[in-house]
Amino acid sequence: MTRKKLTKKFNWFNFALFFLASIAGVFVLQKSIIGTTCANTGSCKESLSLKVENGAVGKFNGQKVTPPQIDLAKKETPTKVLGEATLTGEKHIYVDLTTQTLSAYQGDTLFLQTLISSGKSFPTPTGEFTIWEMLRATRMSGGSGAFAYDLPNVPYVMFYSGSGIAAAQGFSLHGTYWHNNFGHPMSHGCVNMRTIDAEKIFYWAEVGTKITVYGQAP
Image (spheres, rainbow, N blue to C red):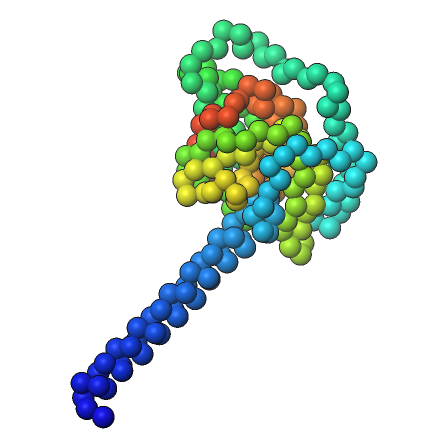
């Protein structure tokens, strides 16, 4: 075989190896993104519809938990905060992972500040986000082993996306009934809030409200 033919054969062989490596790389990257960076389910298919399961039993870190009863027939109104009626300006939510706090501002006025629990089994991503879906209640599940969870009737869910985090990855602010350890990382990536605080934010915020997440969790 001539050198020219050998060179041509070698080039095709290298191209084939490069092509196969590229396919493998895409697969591994996709598996990494889909399999490990979801705040809700391992398959990144969060529930995007209202889902109420009164009477169901939840599971968190191997323990059974009792979800709250959701009464959708009852008309709920936001809890009024002193001076709320006079607030003007753009609404913006700030989540400080270092201090595990959430601060909600309208213009220059602080609407609410409270402790939260960010990601423990998987870190809550930092960046600039916007709320794209708001659900009064839904089911969330995912994790594995000691961090597995299956939680019906998660209340006041505000899904957000941005800064490279796709909507389908299921990150959100939401109320929490399965622990009371706010001020410390506890979640699978979402921002856990006391239900009473999540309710206030839920009725104050709207689709399109900006969220800034910054800092580093302890």
